[in-house]
Amino acid sequence: MKSGPTRLSPLRAMMAFLPALSFALLPVLLSAPGAAQAAEAWRYGVVEAKGDAGLIFMPSRFGSKYGLDIEMVEFTSSTTPVKALISGDIDAFTTSPGVALVAMARGAQLKFIGCNWPGATYTLYGAADVKTMADLKGKAVGVSGPGSMPDLFAREALLSKGVSPDSVSFANAGGGSDRFRALLAGVVKATATTSEFEPEAAKRGLTILARASEATPKFSRNCIVTTNKVIATKRDQLVRFLAANMDGYDYAAKNRDDTIAYTRKIAKLEASDPSAAFIYDEAMAQKSTDPLLVMPQDRLQWINDMLLRHGTIDKKGDVTAYMDDSLRQAALKIRKR
Image (cartoon, rainbow, N blue to C red; front, side, top):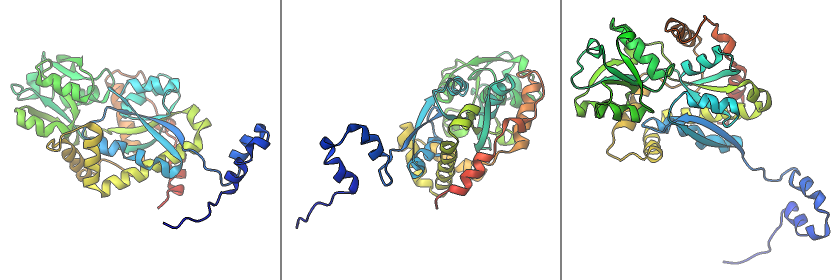
């Protein structure tokens, strides 16, 4: 290969003479127009990677497009990230709206800034010998803590069949995968978790007791939440972060095979595991995800009122006070096609 003269950029040419320059000038040189800028770190909290990981993690692949290095921080339950967010350990997280609404009702300075999964792809699974909801009376139901989506969905599913939640006991059985394993092991007689486990449930002879799309059609699975402090101090980054989410969910909706392959890579699923394809196809068929991140006020208000019915919060609130749509609107304007 013919070699030619090496051409130095103006910045590199100046750097060659740094010994003759005062190092006090270095910050000035590095901030000069045209100097390469490193992507800004952004910590995004999510619940453990499962069969839906390709959808939930996809925005991280678009962060660099908007000058962000999005680090996905996994938690085993949806309640723990609230503390991490308030303490500043993460910048935003995606969670069941109920979890955030409980914290907001108790004075946490949080805001909904978009809803990436406004639909609810959730199922209440029963053991093989549990044929109806009434069979759960006196039995243990696995959830992930009071006020979590599994807890609230299980309660509403029971009520939808005329069974009082007070007639069962609720056991904290960890994250979604852990809860399903607890059911298989006989530790609990039912559990509420994502519908991706339905193929495995059929194979194991488990009972499908309720599906969210039928029992609780106004449930929302995930919305994106941040603090008032982050909105005030990192507004520009937040807008770019939401734009990356929009691109990520839009890409995922249009690229089934790549999204499923990405899920298997992140969640370390075998190629024969049907959960990734099942949850993807269900989410698309039900239009459960929304690339535009529109916040469904009616659904959020329904969830808030449901929390009041179950005594999880003390008084009725207007969810519009907990929403900031200005960041999403700004993100729509900067999306790069």
